[in-house]
Image 1 (cartoon, rainbow, N blue to C red):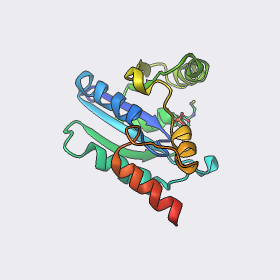
Image 2 (cartoon, rainbow, N blue to C red; image 1 turned 90 degrees about the vertical axis):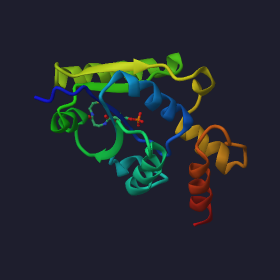
Image 3 (cartoon, rainbow, N blue to C red; image 1 turned 120 degrees about the horizontal axis):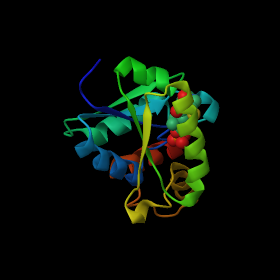
Amino acid sequence: MSTKSIAVYPGSFDPIHNGHLDIVHRCRPLFDEVVVAVLRNEEKRPLFSVAERVAMIDDQLAGLDNCRVESFSGLLVDFMRSLEARVIVRGLRAVSDFEYEFQMALMNRRLNDSIETVFLVPKDEYIYLSSRLVKEVFYLGGRIEGLVPEAVVGCLEKARSD
Ligand code: PNS
């Protein structure tokens, strides 16, 4: 069993936004290692491929020594077992997140009782931020500067022109 404390921050990250990055920065001092885990789930019809999402995140994690990005498919708890990780980190925003997050945390506990879910609250300016809203505002011509990293704005522009 690994003696390192490894946290997994799972999600769709389609695309990663500043609220996600805020959570990554908040987790870093709490764990030896933070693994941002991108779910491989084509059923959700993501805008960006897994490879594109992983590349965008990797770009943002450059220089952060205890963070890396991976992708996974199947059950999160199985992926966690393969890493010997015992903590799932999720960002908790508005009250509306609560039921969904509670269901996932309890299901993951049922699947593996030695894994704990830890919720972190993002900076208040990101409380109402979601990848879905970022895409919607961008495609309708609204400003998304300050909500996603500049490189992600570039990826959205490229996706729009393709
Ligand atoms: O960013 P999202 O879409 O809210 O993230 C959801 C995610 C990836 C954390 C969740 O769908 C997940 O863990 N899926 C893996 C499948 C799984 O383990 N399901 C059972 C536990 S809910």
